[in-house]
Length: 66
Image 1 (tube, rainbow, N blue to C red):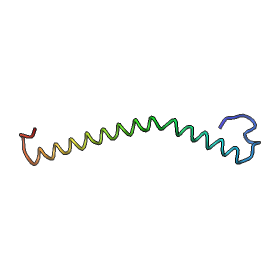
Image 2 (image 1 turned 90 degrees about the vertical axis):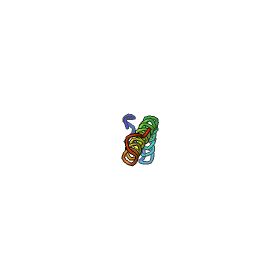
Image 3 (image 1 turned 90 degrees about the horizontal axis):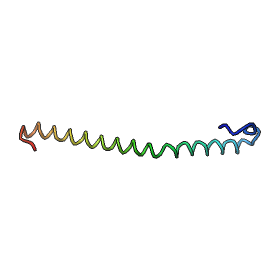
Image 4 (image 1 turned 30 degrees about the vertical axis):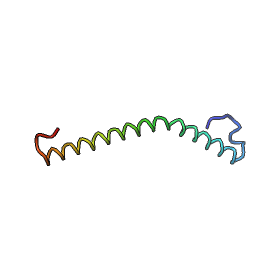
């Protein structure tokens, strides 16, 4: 919170409101990147689940699994 010399002279509620708005702006800036990371993790999760299922099927059915 670097708004200038009058920050500490403002009432607590005003300072708190400024801080909360700054925090909200920071969080909103993080959301798009978090969505991308979440999508990447879900994609990796599905790939791992598919690989596990393929290996389990290979163990059950043998070499001629397509």
